Image (cartoon, rainbow, N blue to C red; front, side):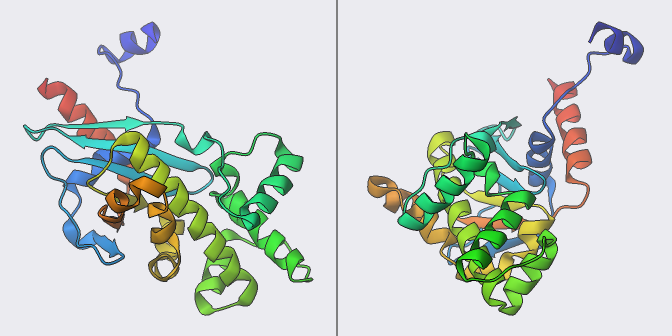
Length: 239
């Protein structure tokens, strides 16, 4: 670190890639934010706390906080590695299959490119069919078109994603909104809007009513990491 600081002649800013994505959201044009479910979108307001989730090679999660004075802070995490919590007999079967293969079963084992492929294979086997390894984009496109195996795969994926999002809101106190990001979830929007995603997010017993009031949206930001890193750097210079 000292060598890098000497080269830059300044203390370097090192942030998680998902924290950078969160940093980019307050400056994103509202036209690039899509509502998921019945609740109206809320702007990134002063005093608000938001949960940011994205699925790709891994499962990313960050918390975005907007202070009362309008200043912004974003906190990256490794929440994707928290333990998968099954909520049904179907989930129990998934847990068993993944545990035999990996030992510890994190949410990322299901909510990632590899996780989507694993689910696709499991659903096909349960239906007595054999499928070749499929690209995640192909699975999503097939599911949206109504392919039986892919559609069921996306239903399971959306349900697990909803449970993960609900856990994150409760842990972070992100009552002002959940923001989904990333290309894969963008392609899944038609399915997420009609799946059990939102219902599973709120299925937290005594906290269900509070979670039902949390809006969900999708943010389509290009070059989000770079835009967010620049915003974080500007914020540090203003301190």
